[in-house]
Length: 344
Image 1: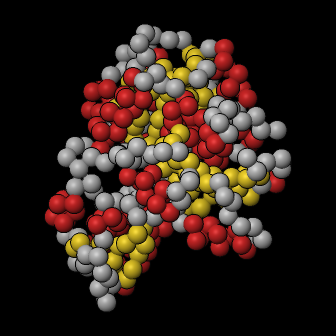
Image 2 (image 1 turned 135 degrees about the vertical axis):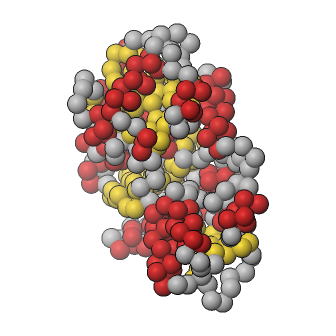
């Protein structure tokens, strides 16, 4: 692997690393930019402030800030037009999208402001790299949180069915990366349309592999069970890991968590008493407990909201001293035949 562009697309930021084999990591290009959904949301907000209609086109991408901006635009009384593909960003059920007031059309109305949707903006990244004398590498790896296509069922429930399938198949870390993307992952499929050879991962899987690239975490996972908790801007994910397997996990919305609640969830996850229904009743995505209670040798905390657990006996993972590139390190590890990359 000569060079790889790793892009970890989160809810608040997109974290980018141009990894060059043999070059000290500190000298590789590293960027933390606003997430694509944040940038799209800002464009829609600008159109709202100017009283202009918007036309959404491009790819299916993550929602969050962009979907919020669309709802606010409609509430302000201004039209929203969208192609079918871009409208799936708002909801997998296009009937519900239309009920919101979005008008589906393949053509841009003359009066509307065009806003392109995409989780991966290659022209932007190409432009940034060109400014410093670089070109896009042939190898690209991207992480997005993909709930899966679920037009008739809660995407939280459907997403956890996918995690349940992963665990039923053995919970192997090597199964978290895709060269061939399953059809239900619409965000990943959308990226494949622009970059057919891209390696794709879910952001939770990328963060998990990234945490394991930290030498302390890697060594602990070889000897015992470790808890890896990633506190993201929008979602939080915890997994019990031993060697090459995940033994249990849960996923929640970060905004609904407190330090006390997280500590309780971690204790109950290790004790095999945390239930999927209980997690969903609290507004989370779900939980898959281990088959029996486990004793964790190390509790690892990472993610941009890690300050939530600033007090306690935790290890704050930051491979190469850069926590924000955790997902990128996971993408690199996956691209390197899923061998845990031993960065210098």
